[in-house]
View 1 (cartoon, rainbow, N blue to C red):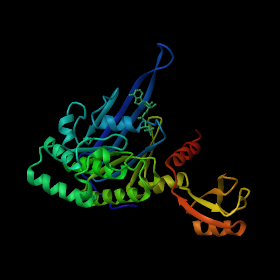
View 2 (cartoon, rainbow, N blue to C red; view 1 turned 30 degrees about the vertical axis):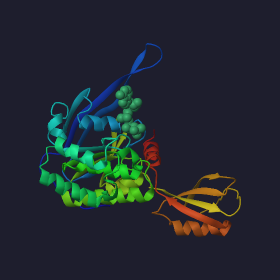
View 3 (spheres, protein in one colour; view 1 turned 180 degrees about the vertical axis):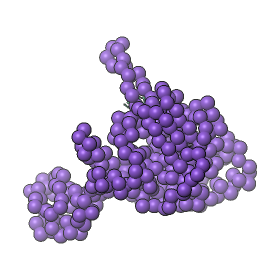
View 4 (tube, helix red, strand yellow; view 1 turned 45 degrees about the vertical axis):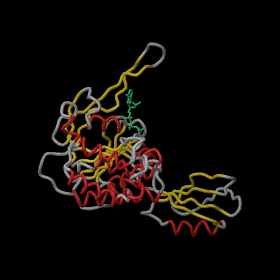
Length: 328
Ligand SMILES: Nc1ncnc2c1ncn2[C@@H]1O[C@H](COP(=O)(O)OP(=O)(O)OP(=O)(O)O)[C@@H](O)[C@H]1O
């Protein structure tokens, strides 16, 4: 688990009480029905915490974030972010909050990255000194130097995401909210971004709230997990606590030298499936019970292995098994 949590005596950075948001959605013809995206959500996040906000597709994560950022008005209940009422005090909140939407850009597509930073520094009213100091710090730590002069639309996804994170942090917000920050990134880019976020939090005490479908993000970045199920809070606690509810299975993927029937009788493993006539087979195991090495040895007794990889548990899989363990 990452870094120490910062005890806080002040007001929570995020506080919601019975927060609810409904949408009216069109069904057939002129008919419509009401969808409850977030229901009766009561949470507190203290300064310095790093919280993973996870749940299945459509569970209500983005809707919650939009209400916390003042972009969406709640149907009922209340939210306070950095001690402010997000909708009516949105401008003041913008000075204290940074938001990164993995699938949407806040940068100017046709401008070089450096110019986007300049505009944002002006928007946030940073002094020239502060702007230079903070930009230099972020450029160094996010390794942006080589493409500061490149128009944003020409950046790779990984480069752009680093640019997005820098843009969201330029004004040194006390709360950074990230909606799917590592989506689509390769393993190395993910790792770099996670390391940066950990360092940023350690140095500046920034509170982190992130939604993700990547269990690697959760296990490396988040001390606390909030799990939502159909808009309702289903779990609030540590990853270790969640592991007690459902084992955090990893998946060993083996590529075999010849087509092979599904491997059976492997100790402490579940066969998840095969591809290409059994040339590739996927085996889930609980790292608390066995190791990838022990499982590989057992596979090697039955077939010749050409290549292998180990996948992190998938958030969707964890969420599904939490639901199953609750009888849903
Ligand atoms: N603007 C909208 N109009 C109508 N329905 C909406 C709107 N925004 C969200 N919803 C609905 O609210 C529910 C929650 O959506 P939300 O985007 O918050 O989920 P999510 O947990 O972020 O999902 P994902 O992981 O897929 O991004 C879904 O049923 C979605 O269809």
